[in-house]
Image (cartoon, rainbow, N blue to C red; front, side, top):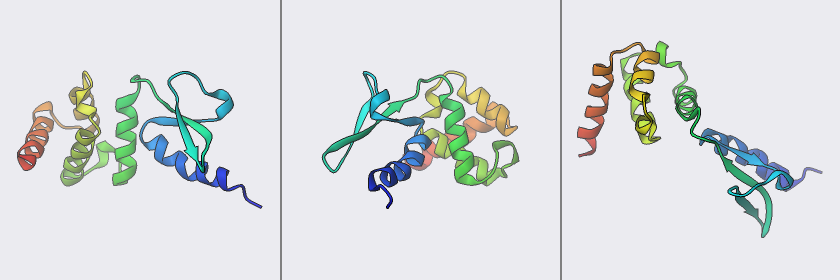
Length: 123
């Protein structure tokens, strides 16, 4: 018989990890971890990862979503990737524009053009 709690945690894990966090067993929890309560019982905890590596995790998530590495994307895919990264707040991180433009193989000016187009579309 399959344990429904373990099935729930297995389904939750990819979602939590795509957000840059981890599912932690109850016995390994520490201060600051957020409890996962299911059917009235704490079955695990969610631990947010530190900012170190946050941009790389966001880029990896967007690459999985789009199905291509930044450097291999066509123009439309790069624009979509920039939109998703912006929605993740990636460009709030210091040096993100330089890093992402380098990984995409575009200039910072081009990346700012994509960001400005997103801003105009949202206005």
